[in-house]
Image 1 (cartoon, one colour):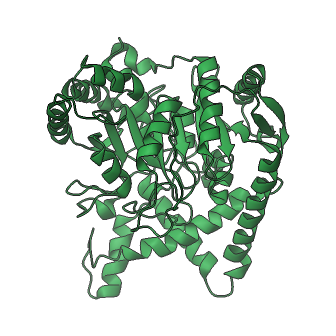
Image 2 (cartoon, one colour):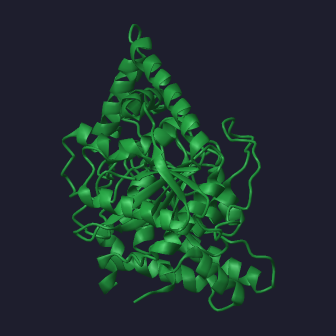
Image 3 (tube, helix red, strand yellow):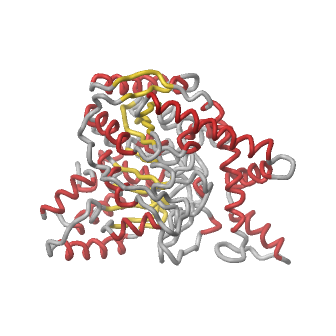
Length: 489
């Protein structure tokens, strides 16, 4: 049965504005869903029911006065546990931060909170956002609501699963190499990675600083546009945040696809792409063509090197960023006879295998004698990919590919094969290296009934065109995606 927590944020905002529902009733609906299903999904690390209900009650009192209402007011929201929340535990899915309580809020959350968002809780994730399956969390894996024996994708799998299962109406994640879009694809929700710098990274606990991007999980493209409009904008506390105009991203969503130039990436339908995924994405392209879009073949000639470049750049930046966890200032401390032994023991006990693997990869790539051969070459590839995007967007308004080469795979299936795991992000990584916006939109189900995502990419700061194309496809497909888990909820 459909509950309040199953509706889109836009639908709920309309009901709140009309006085048909209360923020408290909506929060209670989401909290009840979490109580009913999260023992099987494992999406939340730190639920915040008291915070949610108190905030919702305050909003009801405020809205009863007839005061102006934002599009996010009263809507239950979950935050990936790499975004700091003042007074609320923030672990990054790691034992090394198991007891860390930040003294400040992330800017993304500050802006949403100021507009009336209701925090439902902090979600599970791969440790320090390093992973593609959400099996790397120190607190256990997240299960996909569509099939509890499969992964939800990663690293933002907890946020994706929470939205897919109705435990939150929308959620924030982070996307460094696909960590919003890939889990969105595997769980049947909309996943947005905006232009690098659109949303401040202040309060986002760093993995790879030149790639990390705050993103969103929603049930509709309109909701993604609404959230971005609230969070976007320059932040003096983040030097990489862009001082660019923030348009009303919801304008033009109903303009359709007619006249849009859509480029289908030739490299995205080769070896390794599951047949059902390729068929469904190509059918989505045909839909766009039937709506009046001009469809042609596009290419990113250097995309084949993106995965290799990413797994040099990201671990290199991680090795630097994670050096701060030394047992001295905050987080876990395991005592030793001296500071060196204390640091060795602290990191040994606090970091999981995947984090250690990436720290070692990055440290090696940055070491004397190897820096230019590895990290330097990877940055040159990044420049070539930027040039590829610039050339492609001279001919096309948006580019299309599968979001992920496969649908959700069984938990444990790739845990012992890092390369097989890394290949899950092969279509999402180029957009991170290029800093351009990308969105994953559900486009169908495979033969096993698991969701498939189609990825749309646009030039930097042109989220509006991307949203327009995504909304046109979403409206035409008119999919009703409800995980089997909810049949008994």
